[in-house]
Length: 255
Image 1: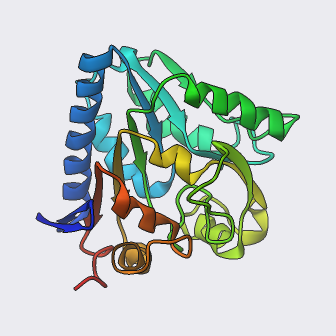
Image 2: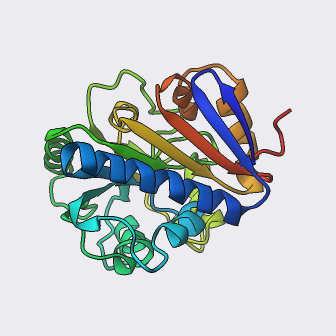
Image 3: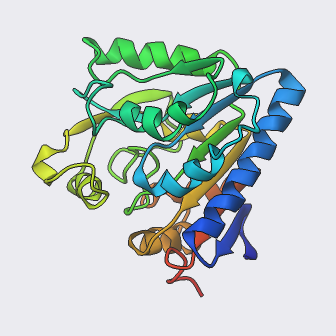
């Protein structure tokens, strides 16, 4: 592992996905345990995408070593129109890659992509997020530098909303195909409910896990480009406690 800092963002670089995943899971365990010790509960937002497979496998590996009964789980996006039972939904991923492998958390708060009123759903989830500060966000960076569904076209570092409906650009929808979640871009919903950049950025700690060659340009732009909405993930360089875990493929365009 090698370590560098880009502004305030710590970069940890690992030889492969498995080493990256183990280190990220160790870091997340420490943050959750510290939050629970300090406040009796840990409020954690999880990214739900194939880029998180190895990390979540390491985090949920038996035997359970985290006080999951004192963890409140959130996730950061959901496709509009998909139900929790549909294979491509974010909630299906959350259940199969996290919840099925751990003791029951204190609570699981889910975004409902099939809600009859999307504005009301955004308000409902915003109220849950605002009940107490978020201790930890476990996120990734999209192929175009997006955070959750905050792509260049809709990302707003000063957004007043916590949750909103986002139109998904063609590149974002193609990434869902590249990830194997959909067969064709035309199958990917055109919109998603997403936590905004300020909602994600409000967490006390951010742990970002980004593997793979397809993420190399986004990693380079995040670390070496301007800090602005043209690369939403660049905002991570200003967070007081954020760590970016990458494998050698994702870091391949860095000096």
